[in-house]
Length: 264
Image (tube, rainbow, N blue to C red; front, side, top):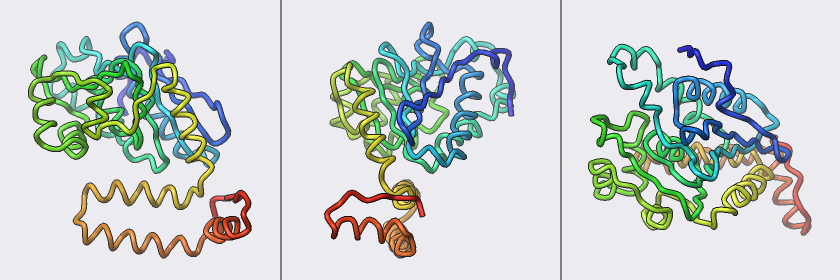
């Protein structure tokens, strides 16, 4: 795992505002929460810790009012060589987020550009404030996306729109991102985090086994044929019939009361 001289700074804060919900907040406001190596390392560490924490059922990730994340910290890229970048193992760092089995909600205000847009796309739900701006401007500095945008953006918005965004580096508004299918919902800026938290609380209160199976199967649908995906879905559906939560959920529905799920 790479190291950084900035490792003693808290660039990624974790809060527990509600039971079963963790809030991950990027904390480099002076540079629009740009991703330097230390921030990437801390993000990876925090997400691995939250993945292992059974008390956490849903994760919200956010920045601040001005920026969710403005992308990579280009000061670290100016003199970097191919070997330098390869030795940072960036794909391994990102995998802590993309491989997290728990639902992730991105609460986005302001800029989500480059690596910031890629970070948002690794979430399962994106709640965008009206001020949000999304884009992949890497081509404008002689680079290209390196954390999945050529793949995730294309799957989210289709080839024609993805090509235009990737080849021009232009930004799109929250409203455009919603119409493209990139974000889940758009709300007034002051409601972005509250809306995300309400969604997180609802998901966290749901049966964890079913929630994780749904996330796993939806992500698998992006990498498999329809036939293979439907077959996997049928098996996951059958497996849930051995869970106590299934029995509790149905019984509560029939008895017209709120269910008490235990993740078993």
